[in-house]
Amino acid sequence: MRPWILAETNYAHVRDFSYEVAVLPLGATEPHNLHLPYGTDTLEADAIGTRVCEAAWNLGAKVVMLPAIPYGTETNQARCRLSINVNPSTLGMVIRDIVNSLAGHGVRKLVLLNSHGGNEFKPLLRELMGSTSVHLFLCDWFRGLSGDAQQEIFDEPGDHAGEMETSLALACFPHLVRMTPDGRLAADAGATAPTRFEAVNRGWVSITRPWHLLTTNTGAGNPFAATSDRGEQLIRVIVDRLSVFLFELSEAKLDDRFPF
Image (cartoon, rainbow, N blue to C red):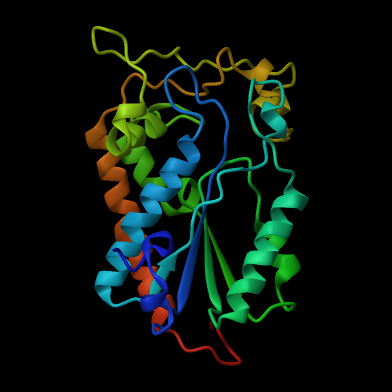
């Protein structure tokens, strides 16, 4: 039993232990090029969350990782076969119910560990602020937490099923990565199509991207430079940074000026 993972923990332990921080991994069910599994985001969230919570626990944090939510917002990939969409409002209600459950059990610090780019939770945090006793924190691990490290570790991290995600998959669930008989990735190059508008292509204006028009086989970013070693390097950065935060959050007292 790993007591920092709720799904593995029993009532004999939980009823007598006071957890300070809960971590909720959030993934998705969607295709990732031709070589990565539909559950890539969820598998990443679970693997990263497990390692981060273990490291935080070893530092002394009273932290527990909740079971991952395997569905996310997939309106971009609506035309990609068997992408399973949960609208933002629906997903927000699920998280609200989880927050209320935690509040009822005296766990008043929750970290959303998001692994899917289609999930946007900052509006939800603003909506819940002041309406619950639970303090929420959001970590999109693939953005601010690891953005600088990605540029150092990878030739080109990629946007979706590219070098970064493929490296993580090779490090965490290599048996699910599709290979050719001669040991190469069975993937396409992850090229993306430009829109007809320069302002959109240069990032001055944003849109919701229809993935079936943007990509050839749902990949956005070249995966072929990926290695398991690069994946492990990135995980070490994430674990080092986030585990310390979880320990500090666990130790922090809740008062009128929290989190300041």
